[in-house]
Length: 120
Length: 119
Image (cartoon, rainbow over all chains, first blue to last red):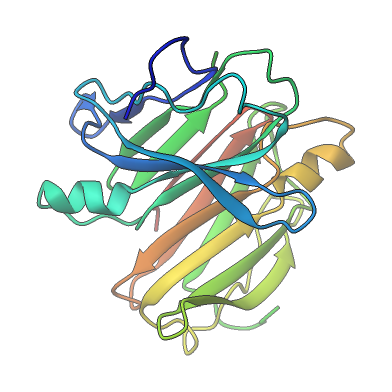
């Protein structure tokens, strides 16, 4: 899924903190909210690699100020490794005011907990 | 908000940026209608001085299903004169056994948040 050329200004990293491994092969999607209609548009879908990362999420040109959402298919992820989970999916909604910066939106995850922070 | 018997679902919001409970934060509880795939709002409330919101749901109303707790974190930080990376935080979870007690806290700062399934 990765795009050629420059690095995406927005990155993620999924970590399975229960097992102490990257959250690999997890489906995810990036969405932007239309400010007038408040409807969500899908920008890209992807799957995390061996290292739990997903390069090429968005290009610099497309990375305009706005409200974005990263949706992680966590329920599916646990199911494929034969486990149940408290959360069917995780959505993180965040505001980009200054697209000139780099943003890192990681997800640290177990079957019964998760956390995220704004990194760079 | 329901009085009397303790809700089987509770929450607790903590402002780790300032080291205080997040008081006066608006929140709402929703359940997913699986026929229409639409969220139905069950209750709205505001956290108290201790960051808690008693009476979220009654035992009778608490059936198996997919629920969402939406925390108006952006509004909260704004009322303290601060910006935040997240306009709100929504935690979507599955209740398979409504006989249990479920505690869904939100531990948050302007630039991070976490949650876990407690009891």
